[in-house]
Length: 341
Image 1 (tube, rainbow, N blue to C red):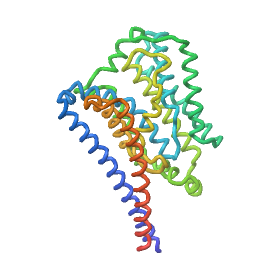
Image 2: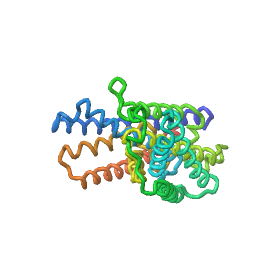
Image 3: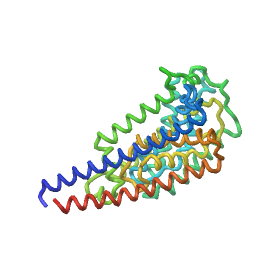
Image 4: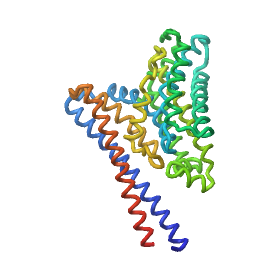
C-alpha cells in the first residue's frame, strides 16, 4: 500500500469514528426528547419554566463530574473517588466561609478546585507513577477521602445561615432564565470538548485509551497524560463540590455519597466507551441530563423507584453492548477499506 493509501485510510477511519460519535449523541438526544414528550403528555406542568430550571439544576453537578470522568475513561481508566472529593470540597468550602465570613466567592471557588486537584494528584501519582490499577487506587481513595471528610466534620453540620448570601444566591440565580450553575457546566463542557478535539494533548488521551502500548511506542508520554487526566477529574470534582455547597447550603460529611456510580452511568450511557479510546464530553453531559430527567420523569409517569433503577441499569447494559457492536463494525469497515486500498 502506498503512503497516499495509508493516509487516505487514516482519514477514512477518522471520519467513521466521528460519524459513530455523532450517531450516539443524536440517539441520546432523541431518547431524551421522547422521554420529555411522553411525560409532558401525562403532565403538562412537567415542562414549565420552573420545571426546566429544576432539571437544569439537577443535572448541572452531575454533568460537571461526568466531564471530568470522561477525560479519565477515555484513557481506559476510571475514577471512583469523585463523590468523596465532591463531599470533601463542599465541606471545605462551607468551613472556609464559617472561619472567614467575608471571604470573596472567587477565592472559595479557587480553594475548592485546588483541593480537588490535590486529590487528583494523589490518584494520578499512584496510577501513573506506581502503575497501580485505577480501579483499585480510586476505590481506596474513595474511602480515604470520605474518612478524612468524616474526621474533619466530626458530626458537625454547616447550615445556609453560616454562608454569605451572595454565595447562596449563586446556587439559585438565573441569567436570561438559565441557572448560573448551569452556565458553569456549559463553560466546563465547552472548554473540555475544545481541548480534547483541538489540542495534541487531548488527541493523545484517545490514543492512550485505544492502545497504551502502541501509544508508548509512538512516543506519547502516557504516564504524564494519565496523571493530568486524574488531576483534571479531581479539579472538576472540587468545582462540583463548591457548586453543591452553593445549591444546597446545608452540608455534612455525607455530601456526594453515591455520586460516583451515577457519574460512571452518565458517562457510559453518554457514549464514552468504558474500554477507552472513544466518546466525547458532550455525550457524557447529555447522559447526565438524560439520567436526571429519568429520575424526575418516571415518578410523574407513576413508575416505582425500583423500576427507575432498573431502567438506568438497562441503559448502561445497552450502551456497553452498543459500544462493542459499533467497535466491531468499525474495525471491519476499516479493514475492508484498507484492503481495497
